Length: 176
Image 1 (cartoon, rainbow, N blue to C red):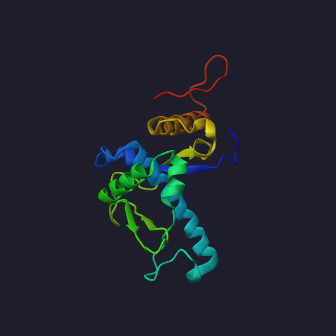
Image 2 (cartoon, one colour):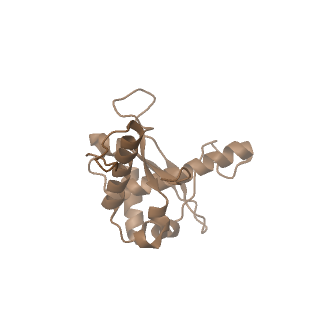
Image 3 (tube, one colour):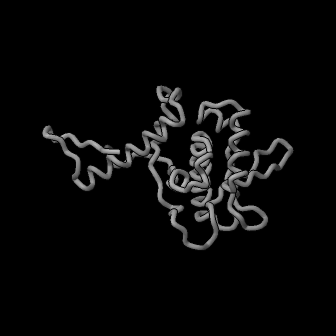
């Protein structure tokens, strides 16, 4: 696997914490993409300081992802994207601020919980290769398949790292 594999973080708490069991797979992918865009906004803010175009009047960092961009990236309809954003809001994972005047909404992805420590680490993640969203041959993959791939990739990389699960032909495999 190339060392320069570009990926999006798919946070493990979305699968490990029972609070999010009913959150659909598509919403979890949407959260991953919006959170990634937030990371880009953070990098921009570090580079440009308080003058960053991604800091609001309260000093909060936001990101912009139009519904059209999300529709294209996830191969979904506009009503589906809007429905999934509403679900993220209901689960406390997103704040979506409408500006009006044909301006894109400001998106504030949130980490769950508060400043206390909990059983689920909100910073651990699976790696979702960008190719799964950018390469047209993967556009028809179901959200569940994309997530399963990320989990298998994680297990495979762990097997390689630990030098575990090597068959008699020296092929690395993973066990679920």
